[in-house]
Image 1 (spheres, rainbow, N blue to C red):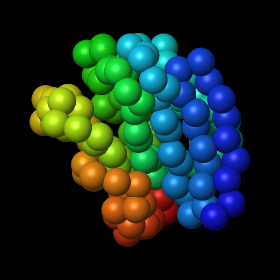
Image 2: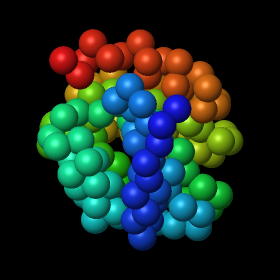
Image 3: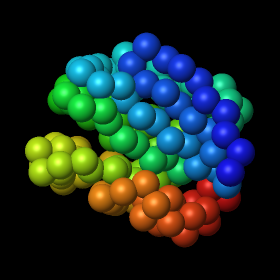
Length: 131
C-alpha cells in the first residue's frame, strides 16, 4: 500500500491506495469544526476535488464537539467524502459514533468497525460511489 501523509494540528491525514483516506485524530484532543474543515481542505487539495472514501480513528481521550459532528455530516462534507468507516475503540466511543450516525445522519454510507482491516475491507466495496 502506497501512502502519503499530511500532518495537521489535530490529526494525521494519510492517503492510501484506491481512493481511501485515513484520518487519525490525535490523543487528548477536542475536535472542533475548524479541525474538520482543515481535514477536508487537506483531502480536497491532495485529491484535487475528487471525493474520498474516509476511514476515521481517534486517539485516547479524543472527542468531537457537537458542532464538529454537525459539520462533518453536513451536505458540504459529502462533496469531499463518498463514504465513512469509523473505527470504534471502546464502548464510549461507540456511543459517540452512534450519535454521529443516528442524530446527524450524514447523507452518505457510514459504518462502524472494531478494527482497521474490517473498515478497509468495507471501504474497498464502496468504490462505485467515487465515479
